[in-house]
Length: 178
Image 1 (tube, rainbow, N blue to C red):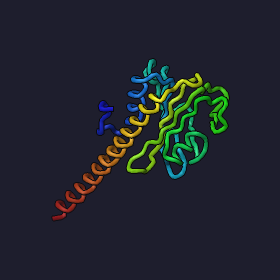
Image 2 (image 1 turned 135 degrees about the horizontal axis):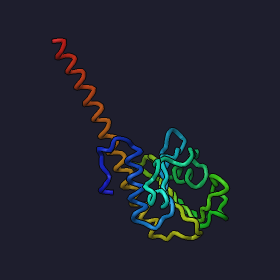
Image 3 (image 1 turned 90 degrees about the vertical axis):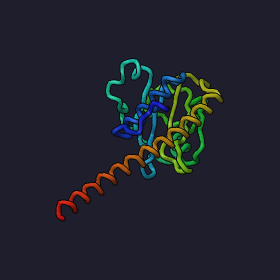
Image 4 (image 1 turned 60 degrees about the vertical axis):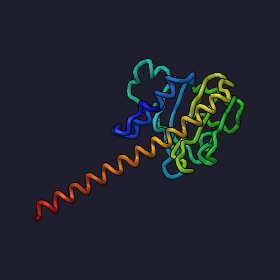
């Protein structure tokens, strides 16, 4: 995660870089990040190996996807603030299938938090059931923790930049009037 820059122009760039780092350093087939807006988790981006190998044609999620807090495994991760691991999604009643063609066998959803506030959820999946181990859970917990810190710092950085620009304009206007 040290390759992710605070100077990125958009939050989407930061999230895309974070997903790329995660995918390039793990054996996950797919990764997505959902950001919390009000009581809804909205897909901010997704990535799989074809995206990485084909240089991620557009970098955007394939379709808009959203979950309510408490809905499905991802919604439970946001609601409880705890990692949720679906070892066999084909047999799990909590699993909400986005479409009938998706081949999700295993899924881990980890809340991205800062100061006990849920900012979003990181999802990783594999088409094979029981694909993930305790080591995957630990890796994702650390990753989500770092991402929460980086995302919060990025937001503060950009808020400060906006405030500096606003105040600079005020000073320039006051100087011009004087």
